[in-house]
Image (cartoon, rainbow, N blue to C red; front, side):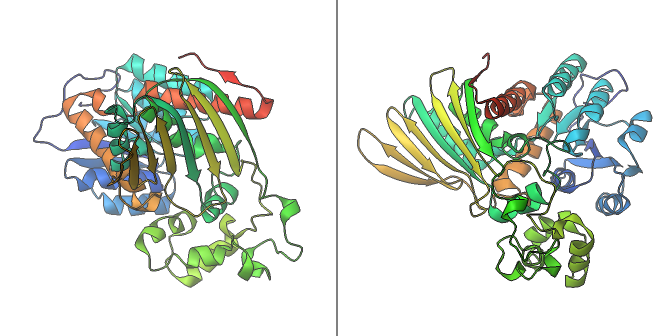
Length: 429
């Protein structure tokens, strides 16, 4: 759809022209989505709003036809003709640009979580509905080949009626330290609770697979390990000065220097730490920035493990475990039905037929569970679906539309209330 300020158009783009996209926030997620979009040959980035000069310069080098704006507000003052905007700012900065660009008539690809409060998520949903624009939330797990394969098996009736599900998110010991102890998502007041920042994907995924809304939630969890009282007696404030560092599982030099020579890992997690690709540059970043800090001497407050129990309108139940203390790998899921069960590891799924007793293992996905490698194909397929929706005007091509994404956010906040209050929270289907 071609943008017309304050008056959304209902026309679809001509098939012989590129889709015109705006990028708001040129961090890791934004540049990933923008890169996928342009690599398809179907879209171009025409404007970038990014306050960091180095990130802006790198993004403009990748998209040389784009104009640069230091803030999204500056861009919105003189909105260019475009089909859509990609909003990939930090979590707390999602709301205002989303509301404004919806008002201006742009379709929107919005990084998850949608916002950091229930009220703001509802404001976003109301705004896009009022403006008549499409919104795709970046719940990338819905789009992976693995997810689509599991969904096809469940919907085929091969397992019978779903009765219960076990789902594990293995965050990974070093990923927890990187993102949720030292990194941008370490504090609830600066981002969101861990359940939204990391596991809104999983709550959304479970609802998608079960195919029924959540009606009841309970939850338990805490910040148990990454606390000052667990700090070794000899530990220093910075890993570079620490005599304990060689035997510490959370050594920053081991993690980040170990990324050198690995393109995916240089992109992430190293890209969040520094643009340097030399030992000297990485060491300087660890000395001067937050990523060299002792994990027991940070200002983090988000949980490092949590369990969520869910009941669905069909009567099915699910248990979800998120924990830091695992290898960094794909989610694990076991689905129990009345005629069969499925045991999946993010790539393979073993289906057991209760009539014949036969087991069949299917290869459904690809390796690469993280942001550096595209979330198992989810990043690319999300972008493809969004571009398809823009081209055809068919919003049903977006699997992570406003209503479904709202539900998973509300479930996360209900789980947080349950965790803090020791309650069972009811949700209205």
